Amino acid sequence: MKIKNFAIPALMYHHVNPEGSFINVRPGLFESQIKYLQESGYTSLNTTDLVEIFNGTRNPPYKPVVITFDDGWLDNWLFAFPVLKKFGMKAIIFVITSLVHEKGKRMRADEGSVKGLPAHKECQQMVDSGSAQEVMLSWEEIAEMENTGLIDIQSHTHTHQRWDKLYHDKKERNKTLNEELKISKEMIEKKLKKQCNALCWPWGKYNDDYIEAARSSGYKLLFTTEKGTNTPATGAWKIKRIVIGNIGNITLRKKLAVFSRDWLSKAYLKCFK
Image 1 (tube, one colour):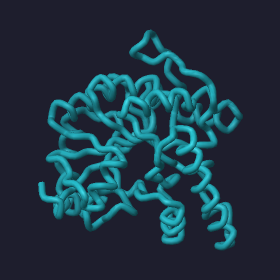
Image 2 (cartoon, one colour):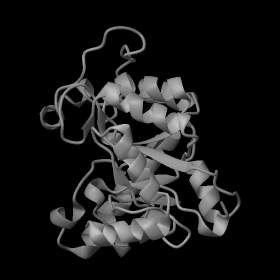
Image 3 (cartoon, helix red, strand yellow):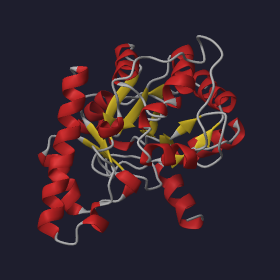
Image 4 (cartoon, one colour):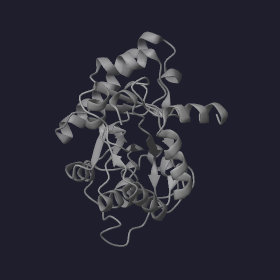
C-alpha cells in the first residue's frame, strides 16, 4: 500500500456488554469480531500511528484498522479490554474526563464472573443522577489499560456538551469550548503522563470554529461520527468512522471490504446514505 493512496477504516463502538441493543455489542460477538480482525491480518492503529501516517513520516500497514470506543463506559474495562488483550489488538478510548473517577479497579471478565452494566439508557440515567462511578471508568482502570500499550486514552471533551444548543452567542460558545478542550487534554496528560493527541466530538457535532479551537489547543486528530473511510484527502481533522453493532463476521467483512477502499466507500455511501 502506497502512502499516497491509503484508506483506513475506523470502527466505532460504545458499549461491550451483555445488556442492551442500542450502541452495544455483546461480549461474545465482540470477541468474534476482534478475533476475525486479528486472524485476517489487520493491524490496529493508535493515535501516534495515525499522526505519523497522516504526517507522511511512516507508511500505513497493509491492512490497517482503527478501533474506537466513545464515552469511557466501565464495560470497556470489564469486557472489551480482556478481548483486546487476548488478541493483541490496539484500541482508542475517548473518555469524558469529568466523569472519570478515582474509584479503584473492579474485577474484569477474564478474572472471574462479572455482572454487566444496565442497558445504555439506564446507564445514562445513573450518570445524570450522580452515580457515574458505577458505570464509568476510573483513572486506575484507565492507567492499567494504557500501560499495556494496547489502549490509547484520548479526549471526548470534559463534559460532553452540545455547545451549539447551550450558547447562542458565538463568542461565549467558543470561549467555553476552548476551556473544555484544554481542561480535558491537560487532565489526560497529567493523569497518564502522556500526550493527548486526539479528540472525538460529542454527538459528532462540530463546525470550523470547533476545529480551529481544537487545533489551537494542540490536538492533532479530530474524530467524527460521519461515515466513510480515511485517506490523505480526507485528512486528520475530519476522521470518519463506521458504526459497529451486533453484527456477525460476514457483515463485518463486507464493511471492511467497502471502507478499506476509497472509491468503493464513496460509491457505497452514494447509494446507501
